[in-house]
Image (cartoon, rainbow, N blue to C red):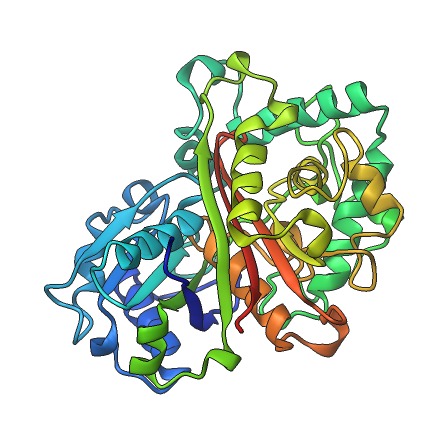
Length: 402
């Protein structure tokens, strides 16, 4: 049986713009800040993993593990860089867990980050589109200028047609998330207030992205800089760190699955690999979807907020959008989903996203989020992090440590 693993500490930057911070700065700062949060030295860490997606293309930097090893106390330790598209952050956390289970240590750190804007905070939309586009299958790129918005616009159209869902139905996802983001001090869009009509209707700030397809500006996640770091430990590791188990959250279930990158090979809307991974995570945790009342799902576009709700088992196939329309995903609903603001309002620093989902969920279970976002009696959480066109899936189930 696997040894239990716990989240001993979590820290993240504000999401948005990191301005003049370089990639070495980001990695070093993320390690030091999460260690400082529990007053420990990086030397206490036995193993590490760092996840990012666009460092080769946007930052001309590789070998991120070597950058982590520049932090005093980490040199010579088992550290690896991981890339699994937008699931890189979740994969980094799993990488650390697997190292601990293999007996390589008792304390590990997972860092995820992305630097997508320049030192003045400006972005090059065309360059970013090209950098992210490489995570699709070459056969599915022709004719698409902005590859992933185009792919998910098609997914959105298919979801609407198959399930009788409207653009306004899906606009509930972005409207709820912007409202949550307004109360999250870490959220990129915390100052932007929108109504359901703003999200559902065409306007100056809400335009169709691809001609002939339903995706609009407010249906999309953000181009974001940011970092997040988690310290994961066994029970022996908690003792080593001097962190009480009562102050921790257990990563009770976790699984990863990868489907074919070609959408033509599968029914994307059914997200079979993701469902399989989620069910494995629930089984490992000894819980079911009914036990979960907190969740963070990978809403790179509003349709994924709906599909993600189905993947975590809170809605049956095709009914995810209705879950949001009915108010069940709100902070005071049946299950508070993306109370952080999600990728749409909190932001989507690609490599940090999966780490931040797990970290925010841990804060929910520990009662550490702002009061307006705190789910009452938060008892268990599910996270669902994807990479590519619902291709790579990393799922976790969290519960309070006992």
